[in-house]
Image (tube, rainbow, N blue to C red; front, side, top):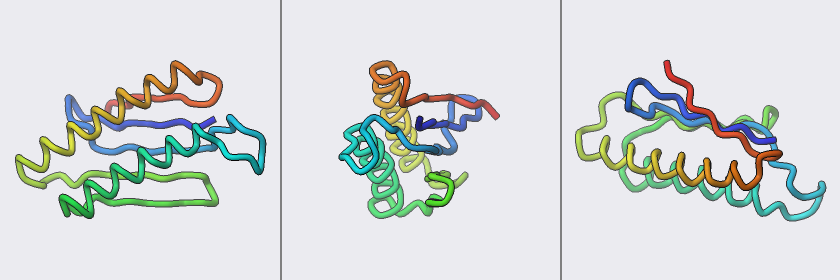
Amino acid sequence: MTTVTFTTRGPRVEAVEFQGHAALASAGEADPLCAALSAVVNLLETTVNDVLAVGATAKVRPDKALISLKLPGDMGKENESICQALMAGAMVYLSALAEEYPENLSVLDMEV
């Protein structure tokens, strides 16, 4: 199972972490859920860091099947708005996937 955890402080999403394997397909077979999750995290990281250049911290830990993205605290009003819209969209999309694949995906909102 993959667990996606959005870390929030009030209305602000500060980070997202993907951990685990979706395991929808058998080992060695193409896993469409895993591909969808990879696309989401790659789109978030690319948009935030390569397009907006806000300097979010991205960590990849293959040994723990973990990918995380943490937004910086001060990135300007416009970039903040764009990043929050991206994170909210990802949360809505991933929550819908979790409803469709409850044995393979869990989406959590952790308030700090």
